[in-house]
Image (tube, rainbow, N blue to C red; front, side):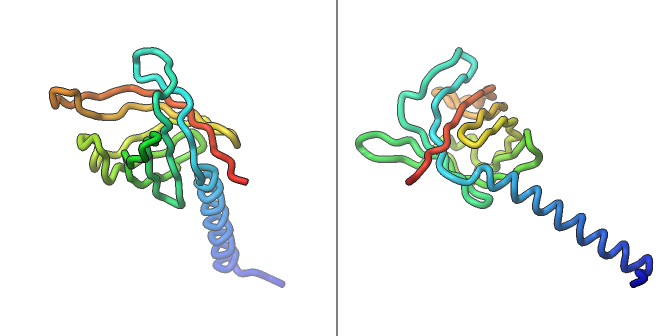
Length: 146
């Protein structure tokens, strides 16, 4: 069967687009699930969280929660997009720290099947209401359900 040049390029384009979507989906799917914060560093040294903190990733959205024996509180709701195998962005729709609302943050990450470490700079407010930028690094472990 002989292919003309237009058919060849059309087929090549379809293959390239399909491959691109597949790679994006694979990267995004790695995030899906429930993750628990196990270590953090906000510029004051490494530490362990004082409360159970969970982050739940869906197809393109995420939520963060703080959990205590009295109940849980949603701290952040947003959208995320994986940009590469080392970078994703979070856009905050609503946060208890209102200085974060509407902000988009580029976040570096390293991930394996069980854990991932993220780092970047986020904005927030001090107790006096002044806006600050804070560098952070966090390590999260995926919660496995039976």
